Length: 485
Ligand SMILES: [Ca+2]
Image (cartoon, rainbow, N blue to C red; front, side, top):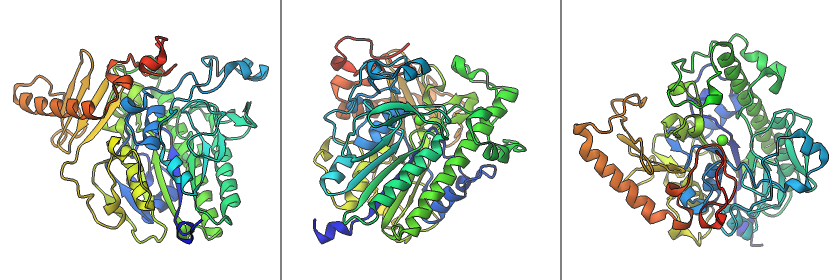
């Protein structure tokens, strides 16, 4: 290995699950206890307008890793089946019952280049701990050589389904602590190697469940007198899904207490990881990135959930905006707040440019590097700042001023004036005065998806309901039922 490569920075990429950017102390929430996340913001850049590519777990994660949109990678809903091989489960796991929707493992991202593969090809040691949720969890994928993952997506915090020695087993410890311990173990194993490392730490926090029994009592009790005034308490959204209608009164309070406790427990884990980097002297050559796979409503708009917290699926800012913090090795940028609109599809181009690696699929990807911001320039230097999102047949275009949401094939569609109505409370679609802006935005949305969508994976033609993906999308699914519900 070249001397130059050995000096390349390490990357620790921390991903939370279902965390809105409102759910951090550093973004102004005075009720949440997140000293370690806040420290990353103090020692780096906090992005105030960062978006996921799809407001639900698996599609968003696939887009982070590959830089592709769901209509390019084919993961359009959270993976309900394809995580593991049901027949190979032990009797104990079959009886546990949480994997009953599984059948055969599916490599959902087969043949699609991830940035971690490019890092591995360039001598990086890549590690993956925690929630994978992109299919066939038993098998190491995408250049990861250290692999300690969960069997599926969400889990009970004290009974997580883990992959250990190529088998699915039940853990008996708080999953946030297990993930932290695996991350620390990777750092210990990698500290003296003569090559750089990349580590993905994918927590399940603060994804449901949120009951008292799901979280450590000591942390739960930190919020026993909390008023939860930082979270709106408004009437239920007319499209709220059946399962979320219970979050009223005491159930609302319990959900919020569990959500906040899950974040604080994760924050402690992040503190342990930062401490390990400092104690081993690795911090001064390590980039730390913190983000969430998708945003979250905990009462915002009268929703408890993300894009699939309603049906039809929604594209509210609270669902599509995510936390994003980047702390550089030399701490040359501190306490910076970036207002530029950026997306998870920009991560792959940015990381590859930062590390100086070629991207062989550059032309196919919709994202752009925001490297200038990491050099202290306030703007990424883009002429046209527009964000696109998709969730199955629902597509969004968002400028600084406007948001247009198109639902294939029949609607309903939405248009919001974000300058005068930042809370997206008044749908202006169909108003005479908005006819031209609607046409403009719709035209740009269609052109962008024609440019990037792969016809074989086109989400506008898929019956995605927010209840889970069962099989490969499009023709690759060979006519099977691809989406649940
Ligand atoms: Ca998620």
